[in-house]
Image (cartoon, rainbow, N blue to C red):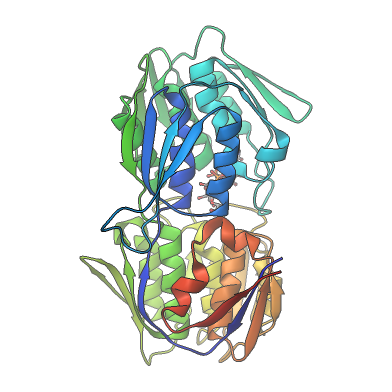
Length: 429
Ligand code: EPZ
């Protein structure tokens, strides 16, 4: 199994290109199941999760072609995928494939909408909480589907097709909103989703669905209205930049010091995180090419942060912020409200000497002057990258084990960081 070796202490200086968003690319790829024409997606990141979803879609009979580079493409441009679901030969998503990645469960929505049936294994994914699918099932039932759970599979049927409905989510859910949105595009009549998730990735998917002929309005607000149509067609869409990758590198620069241009980043996708970084002492300058992040001289100030659905501070940046606060001048409080078990990085950050205690949903971090490198490993994607951030600023050497978590969500991490002066390398085997 690959490991990453980091020798900390270098400031980061230079340019980091931001990749397409994993959490938009995955539902966009899944949306291709809604049409028998080709969906072309540009700026798809080269990630293990994307490759895994390609396998899952291939199992349903989709043809996926990754186009080669074109003249003028810059080095880090994501891949272009041509996805054709002309013939769906299998409406089952098996355990072996779905258990590796939670988002693959979402194929249930387009399969049900277009094929009127689906059999999808209950999902796996990052170990960050119980992560049920009851709200996804509730949404599909509201749209007229009959669902039952049998042998670890959700078996869904809608023999007469889905029918528009009012879906009021009792709690904000990204997965629930994606599923309701995709399913409703081909339902008979109008669907109104209330208390919908407002995440930028929902807006990106809704934009793409509209290009495919869907009638979606209100995405990005808590009330989304979908007028069902009979058929969707092919389209071309560019995946939006990854706000979590952006925030992660911004926190790395705030931690090590230095001056880095995050090329292609869009500040409005993570304003709450940028505000926290400013409070912590980083200088954030949005410009035409992205966002410039610098910290020179000043120490890191402690912060009080609570994770919340968009536009609040994202749970997917909570672990990274905790690494940063491990070196703040004082005591920080980070409260996690989205997932109940998302503090697995606490014990690993402690290996660097970080002083963190937990009080229910809140972590109290007492900053120390310097972290020290150590062998570490993590159980989820964002936790793993928080260890990388800590290692970049720590004195001495760190080995991060279980690198496959990082490969799920960070494209060319070592390359991007070493181009800015970090001492970081992958050790294979
Ligand atoms: C998405 O997960 C993201 N994944 C997560 O990113 C992200 O942390 C999360 O949204 C919150 O922003 C993808 O987009 C692929 P939810 P998702 O449905 O959709 C509860 C990463 O590292 N809930 O908004 O699964 C749930 O347990 C990943 O890239 C139910 O109770 O999140 C959680 O407490 C990790 N019943 C809350 O809602 C349900 O049926 C929010 O979950 C569904 C969810």
